Length: 183
Image (cartoon, rainbow, N blue to C red; front, side, top):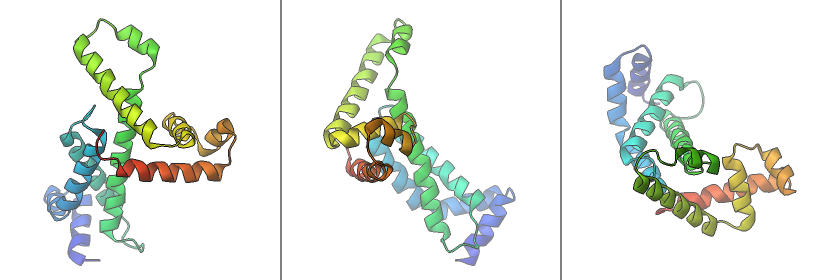
């Protein structure tokens, strides 16, 4: 590991904002490429590209704060994983917000701009339809339960399948969704 990066990490942890800024500049290509890639997956339905860039930066900040140089993982890889996890969480949040229960939608009728509400609902339906078309029936069932924060065991029990089948389905789902560029 580059001693310069390690010293910048230590200084940033101790509150030196300039050191964090220097690290951010060094890893700017990683932060920007991941932020833009995940923003394109969301289709700017609820969040802008700037929102994804900000979340990517927060993920990077988390990596700086929690990295342990004693392990076998380089800081660059660790940072990439932290940024990815933060962006996946944002996508999950977006997906959950798009699935507003009908009773909540009924309560909100009459509030805000009706045209905006209609368009927001249309975007959500379009995204949901594309995901449904992309996945098999089983994968889509797993996806919907997973987005409801069900555990692998709960999903397996509810679908009458093994936990391993659910795990494999989630792997395929994530791979397919990564390949999905436009919503």
